[in-house]
Image (tube, rainbow, N blue to C red; front, top):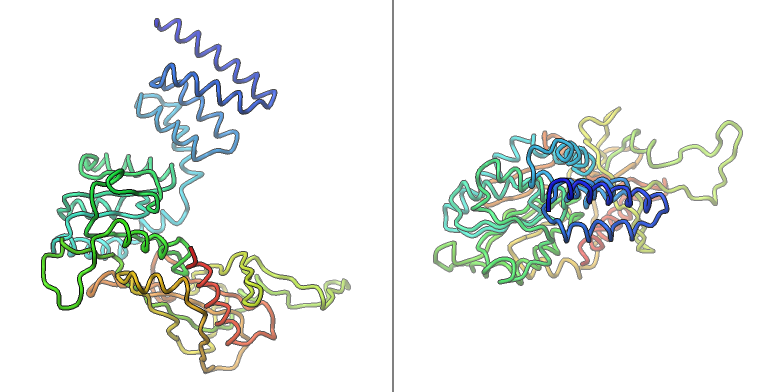
Length: 406
């Protein structure tokens, strides 16, 4: 086909797409582009135009894929490059920037991965790779086989670019999928000796780390080394991070109270009846099982007005990520009561939660309020003045059970 004929085809396609869009015939519009791309799968102009329509419809992740493909087909196509980075700015979560700028986190993860690979764990799977940083740490450390999975289309495309920019595309296999969908030998040839992941949010379990690690131990990892067993580390499976310890503290904090509780019953002469309940978005109920959003997050060291500790720091739970039995028992575990003595008088506004992530026996990361880290603290606001600390802690334990339940 001549260039003039192709340009005529593109013009006709784009005009017809405009007509279909004006008539809200979205399925017909997408069908036209799909047929066009079957005829011209390597046409960057059609790919870019498809992405523009998807972006306007609100399908930003899918649009990013078409923009990225257009740039791959023609690296000098400025419209596609501008479109891709514009949609990437919409889709890349803000915490990625904070995380990548956390030099301590990067250094400690790198050291733990390097130690594991140098000890013999030469095949690695990075779950939730994001920009691919942990995968590249493993490859630089000398891993022979490195696989990385990422569900977000935009983050997967960015990881491909970052890995290629570091000239590691031949040594790292990137998969656009959930780890739960990875199959052997369909996606990776055999079980790996090391899984690395940082799929932990401020409350630890919100990104599904327990479910993904249960699946990894059952289907993707070599069996773990038992106590007293000798042999090369490459013959056994292990996870980085190895474990986590979760801590809590009851606090008084006027700023948290202001955002999560109505403190007055009369507003400029308008009465708020006692039988009407006002709940903040961060609300959960241990009795009904309702959990809209179990917790909010705050950088407590910088919260306006500060906070007053009402209890000492107390340990909530430990989780061994290298024990399949312990991981599986978590989802079925009943909430257990915690009794914590108050050390100061004050108004109970929230339970603040943080953790220590033990990457191995030598390297750890803490998200406590005194640490400068990419993680904030999880905050469980108290919704009613009548609530006592034991009921708040019971609610916390119930919320963890719901987050752990696959």
